Structures are given as C-alpha cells and as structure tokens.
Length: 305
Image 1 (spheres, one colour):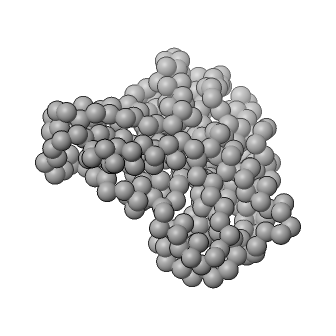
Image 2 (cartoon, rainbow, N blue to C red; image 1 turned 180 degrees about the vertical axis):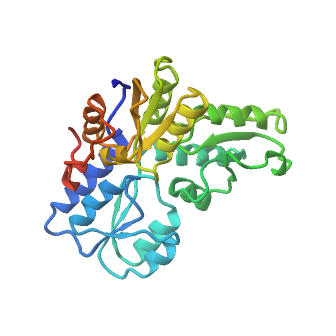
C-alpha cells in the first residue's frame, strides 16, 4: 500500500509542554505526595497510562469539584485543557500543591473572553458538551454555550455587541459555518475564531491532501476532540473512507486489502512513534497478519521519536 504522511505529525507544543512540566515535577524529590491528576492531562490513554505507571493517581470523575474536595493533602495536577478558577481556589484553600499545565492557546481564549465581557459584549461560545476545556470556560464566564448540534433559533434575542468564539480543538470549517448561520439572528455578530494552530494545520493539510487516495487513516485517541474533527473532515469534506486507529493493533479490526493509496494524519496528542509504527505496517500490509505493538508506556512519554 502506498502511504502519504501528512505534515504536521507528532504531539503539539501544548501537549509537549504539559508532559515536560509533569515529568520535571516527578524528578523533584521534595514533591508533596500523593500526586493526583484531575482528569486526563491530555486525551491519549497511553500517555495517561505512562503517568499512572510513574505513580500518579488519576482522578477521572466527571464531577471534578467533588473529587477535589475529597483530597486533603498532596499535589494536584490540572490538565492542558484548562481549569476553572473555582477548582484552583479550592486547591489553594486546602493548601494543596498545584501543578497547572493549561495550554497557552487555551489561556489565550480565557483572556479573550474576559476582555470582551469587560467591554460589555455578549459572548457565544462554541464547544463540545462536557469537554474539560468548555467546562472550565462555562464555569468561569457568563457565556452563551452552544454545540454543533444546538438549535440556534433557541438562543436568546441578544442586542448590542456580540462575539462568537470557540473551543480550541473545533473544526475551523464548522466554526465558520455556524458563524454564518448565526448572522441570520445576530447581523452585528463578530467572529473570533480560535482554533489552535496545531489543530488548524492538521485540518488544512487533510483538506488539501491528495484526492487520488482511496483511504484516510487518522491516528489518535477516541477521547481526543481534535482527532475526531480530523475523522469528520475526512468523511464529509474529502469524502473518503476514513478510519481511526489508536495503535497499530487496531489494524486487526479491518480488512484493508482493497485499498491501494492511503493518507495518514494524526491528532495533536499522538506521539510520532505510534504513527510510524502504523506506517511501517501499512507499507507491507497483509490482512492475515496479526499486528502487535512493540511500544511501551515509556515510549508515549517521549517528546521525540
């Protein structure tokens, strides 16, 4: 099978930064234990398993406030997706050691929303329901939250200055589509599209990719929203057979023998070592082969390779 690897690949700067921060803290002999991670640092279960193997206790409850209230000592790690001021304040009041790995692109969105609210704008925020990035923003700011499936005509009749912005891992195409739909209800609406560069570049590369391909493979975790956006773009925009693989072992679920020309892309929290292992398998693909990953959890915490 011919394989075309789209660029960029590998983990984005926000994921790399989060992993670096936590790894550095874990080398500190004086770090206060136990060490808790409030939610998944990034949306990749193998990266998370790597940290669990290092002794971090993953708290993966939907009610993060309730989970945090049960912790009375130690260190808490807040994820790259951002954290609400409420949770930060609870951790401070309980005198817990705080490690905040919020991505700078997410911090930028928080600052943008705050500044517009101070200028008396009504802010419409497009995100994914129950996603940690959206949850933190909805908790901290009086935004009008919508999803891709929201019935826009049910939004309140807003007047004055209005702005639409978005979760950093959305499809930039979908953001613009919803913006133009919203203009029917709010003619004075302005758009501040905040899809992060790592997400946008991957989407653009896929949209502009080789139309001769008969298969698109997206490598990434099913929890990852930017990965899911790539799969959706492959299906709806490129109109190609598109599958999502988390590891090379997922190849065992498919018979790909009919495909000749494959495009491969990956989510922003997918280590390149995972992508390369899949590429190597695809080049000599045989439906009768049982594929087994040779990677271990330590490989997922490497920033290169």
